[in-house]
Length: 101
Image 1 (tube, rainbow, N blue to C red):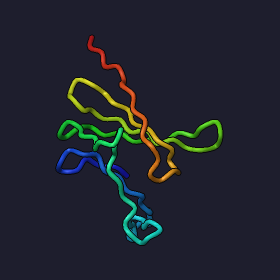
Image 2 (spheres, rainbow, N blue to C red):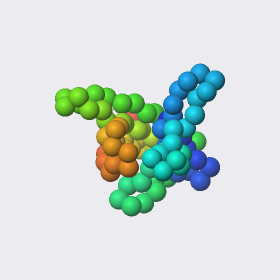
Image 3 (cartoon, rainbow, N blue to C red):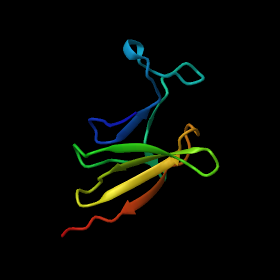
C-alpha cells in the first residue's frame, strides 16, 4: 500500500489484508515494514493531493515489479518502479509524456 503523507512525500507499507485483522506487516526486527520513496538518496515529493496509482506486473523471470505513478510538478507524470519482493530495493524513475489536445 502507498499513500501521500502530509509533508507531500510518498510513503508505503507492506500490508497483511485479513478483513477486520488487517495490519502493517513487521520487518525482521519487529518494526513496522514501512518506507519512504527515495530516488538517488532524496525523498520524493509529489504535488499536494496528487492522484496516486500503484500496480504490479509479472516479469518474464516470474518475479514482480511494483509501478507507482504520480505528479511531481503538476504538468508531468512520473513513474517509479522497483522489484516487488526486494524490500529496500532501488527505485528507478521515468518521465511519462503528458500531451494536450
